[in-house]
Amino acid sequence: MWKPRSPKFVIHALPIAILTLPLVSFSAIAQNTFGLAGEDGNRGQDGRNGRDGQDLKIVGDGKPAAYNLTGTIGEDAEDGIAGRSASSCEQPRRTQFSLIGASGGSGGIGGNGGNGGRGGNATIFYTDIAALQMLEILNNGGKGGRNGRGALGGKGCDCQETSWTITTCTTEVERRSAKDPNAPWQHYSSHSRVCSTSGDNFGENILSSLLSNVLPSSKQPSSDGNWVYRSKKEQSSSASYSCQSGRDGLTSNNGLEGKTGPYGQITLVPRLDIPAEITSDRAALGIAIGKKVGLIKNIWVERSGLTRLLRASSDVPDTYTYLKDTARLFYRFDWAAKETPVALGVDLVEIGAKVNVRNENAELEYQLPGTLEYQVIPENNLQVVKITGGFNPDRVSSFQLQTISGVGTDNQLILSDRGNVRELLKETQIEVECFSKQSATGVVAGDYVKRRKVTFKIPPKLEPSEGAKVNGNSYTLPVGRYCSPWLKADYNAAYGIVINQTTKSGAKYNQSIDSAFIVGKN
Image (tube, rainbow, N blue to C red; front, side, top):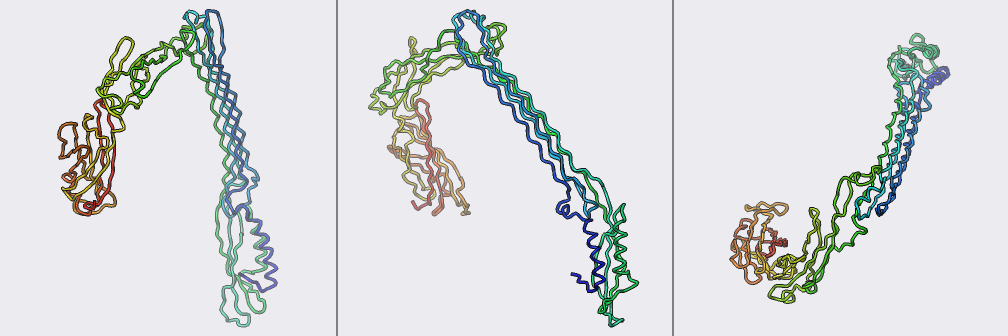
């Protein structure tokens, strides 16, 4: 840091510093903007939705009647609030950096209009369709509310001067010993000052005058007794700067118009009540056998042409729901197997039926386990379901892994079927996927890699395929014949086993067993 020794030099240097300080705005240096940005305007409040129309049951008795079930209109939304203009927009005078004005706040978005209420639902009971012509029904939805308008943005700060140039002068001060006139001059200090700005030389004149008193150029060196001082020729440099006015806030969008509410639903019932439904029934087989069961299902259909059925002044949708029919279906389970339900272990198995509607017609869907064999025989207004055989569904998917043993082609997999149902099924298939970490040449992978899959088919009477052997409920599968390259001693291997069982009624049951092992260690 420069520490001046000459009292004369100190006295004249202070005014220079005081005059140059106002030329720089230190608050603006922190950011190249001037002024305070305007706040965004608030969003307009949304309108409230309209209320739904009243739901009503109507009996068409042939007398004139009118019903207004219209939904109410949605509430109008409020406009957005205008954005605030930027404030404190006085532009700093000719700073040594470019400026940009603060932005105005954006306008608030308009609120959304409220949706209109839904029209009320009406269920109309009648016995004479001509009575509908006496009814006027209004069940249209209410109109949506109007949207709010978007607001204007606020003004940004404007520039009073869009461009300027500042010239900076730099002076170097040297000194030598006052006692030795031949001593070499040494660098002592240097300082810079704004010596001129475009369009205004006031500062230049004052500073030049002051500097001439302190540093008389290089003609008259000054002395403080110990040192002799001189100033070298000034060097100057110029820089141009600009000001950009702040962006005006954006004008926001309008809100959305409220939607018109939908029509309510009209249901026509060509009778004075809606029959109660019984759509399903389930019971234990031992209880259900021989019992006649009746199920009831109303058949509802969609129709068009409602506007032609009601009074012309009505405002309703053209489509409506119509009670076409009420189906009453009866069925009975009969036992026709040689063994009793108890002997087959199915007396506690739940069976039943439910009613479905397809193509405007009702039909029964029987709910029996896939292990039961049955046939449906139609009789007078009754379906008889004759159960001819089967077994308890708990007996399928009951395989357990017993052992995996052997190396290479001698490796085999043994499963046991706790349900022991081979001869009761249509077919059994056992799929075995071979996995190993080591390749056939011994390259080790980080995880098990799928190598090959083999499928063993086990018919109920004939010999199994692929060399499989069945002894009672024990199944021996010679997997090594097909996966031997990856079943070398001490290899890390795994089997993914999927058992697929198909019953005589066509139902399919699946079971999966996964097992990892070290070859030859089991």
